[in-house]
Image (tube, rainbow, N blue to C red; front, side, top):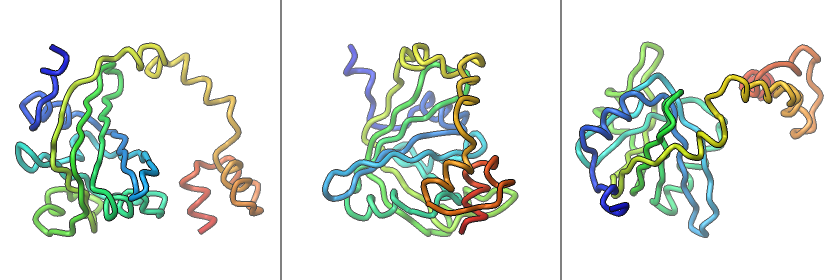
Amino acid sequence: MVANKIIDHVDEYVRLFIAHAPFLAMATADAHGRADCSPRGDYPGFVKVLDEYTLAIPDRPGNKIADSFRNLAENDGVGLLFLIPGLRETLRVNGRGYATDEPEVLARMQTEASEPELAIVVEVAEAYFHCGRALVRSRLWDPASQALAQELPPAGEIAAAQMKVDIAPELLGQSLEEAYRKLY
């Protein structure tokens, strides 16, 4: 019965979940099997279902390292984990991925701000819903658990220390994105 939950395409339920998901984690690996998992997010529905077997993920500005693109050029295996805030179940999609700059694909992912320069196309091999036990145990959606973040140093302080640079004291309390922007 468990094996029967894995389908090889995007059905109406997978499509609906993707349309409501503002976040996913994308796992790739290089030619030597060194894995990488990167966060991707935007407004719900930012991942587009191109057809019953194909998804497209816009490339939005991020850490400027391009690990996923480099990995996919060497090894086309990709795993996606979609999350919807407050929902304990997740959606897993596995398949083969590649980068594209095809104008028709990119146009479908345009937001009021911009059209992406690249997208990752995923050819779906497996799609299935995963039970929420891990999210329940982690209490990820519990506001009381989110208070733990206050115990960490500010992201700007972490960035400056790891990069071994001095930055203005007012940047130490900034988010990683804001701190990196000032450091680049």
